[in-house]
Image (cartoon, rainbow, N blue to C red; front, side, top):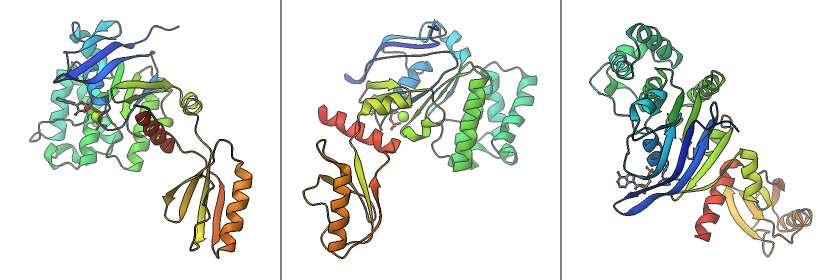
Amino acid sequence: MVASLVQLRGVTKRFYGQPVLSDVSFDIAPGEVFGYIGPNGAGKTTTLKILAGLITKFEGEVTIGGANVVTERDKTHALLGFLPQSAGFQNWRTVESALDTLGALSGVPSATRAKRIPELLERFGLSEARTKKVKQLSGGMTQKLGLIQALLHDPKVLVLDEPLEGLDPPSRKLLKDIIRERQRAGTTVLFSSHILSDVEDVADRVGILNAGKIATSGSIRELMTAFGLPIEIEVDLAVVPETLPFDGLGTVTPHKPDQWRLEVPTSGDADAIIHTLIERTLAAGGRIRKIGVAEPDLDDLFAQYITRSAARG
Ligand SMILES: Nc1ncnc2c1ncn2[C@@H]1O[C@H](COP(=O)(O)OP(=O)(O)OP(=O)(O)O)[C@@H](O)[C@H]1O
Ligand SMILES: [Mg+2]
């Protein structure tokens, strides 16, 4: 087993006595891309701030490259590129000069800054904006500025708090490409998201955080098996009959306009239920556009998982 590059052991963090993280432990191997998933308020940002050395009062131990994030902060800081969830740039500076200062603070030599800053601005489509004031940037542009700042010193470990948030589809693709490129170059990446399908493309492994606890971790495939999802039938109606055909067949939920999902009871036979649904719909004067067993999408999966674990308490 390869020694882990990032290691959290029994991390508990309380704000005003309330636990926000409870005994969180995980490892990230060198060169791995780890997706850190969880709903609002789960504790993702708190975890990443601990890694970045911005929160220093907590129980447990956190190391990066074997160095402790609290007692050897200079060492861990040098290894780390960090994108905060809400980046605080000096608003009145120009894009160029803000990046130059941040690069200098991270110890990037001036010749390297002069080369890498224009390269990265170009890559993110921000060359035109380089002389703009930071406060004149749009939300997505500010997010890109944060990403450039995190990438500038070519860190060994990238910690990105919701890096895809606020980016348009081409920019999301660009960032995913960059994450994969960085991985090939040996960088280890930890990034948070609410959206499981976002991390599907890039993460080798995901950890799911719920209410301050690691609910589960593994590859996406392992998670899908672990979730043990029920089978659902998806019904799209072109003409909706006056009485819907679902009575007594199982739990039904409206999914999209004119689309329903029926959860097949564990003892149920999906084919027989589909047959009944077709008969009933046609008899009631409805028309079917599409019917069949639904492919669970990752986001559904995640939503169901969170709902079920909340119900378990
Ligand atoms: N400085 C603070 N003081 C008090 N409570 C805090 C503080 N920072 C975070 N919290 C609380 O800790 C919990 C976890 O917050 P955190 O920001 O880590 O969640 P998150 O998973 O990043 O959520 P989101 O998806 O909304 O970004 C929340 O209940 C939040 O209210
Ligand atoms: Mg957050």
